[in-house]
Image (tube, rainbow, N blue to C red; front, top):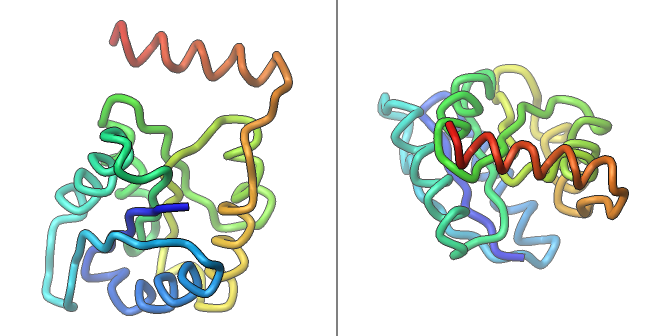
Length: 148
């Protein structure tokens, strides 16, 4: 799978662990920044992750900021994005299985490197359910995107 990875300055240190782990799982990375610990606005990075996803250049994205919350809010402003903060294993896989989440957001100030690796493994191994209830609900999300 090809993924876009981004972080703000608060997530920058954890991003290296994220990238190394994703690559160890055999996936390809497009790193959209940030590239150091200098302050940067998370909406700018989240927009770049989201653009890679919505353009089809990548299948999914991962965003790392301080709490994951700001990144999730910013990414969800982009049409076609379903971003979720995932700080537990169940949410990491179920967000994909039930809600077809395409951007996972994690908080470097909330989770450490080991948990981040487990979250990412769970997120990347999950697939969207074929259950008609989940498909119907996600179709409604698509309709909300189209109508505003």
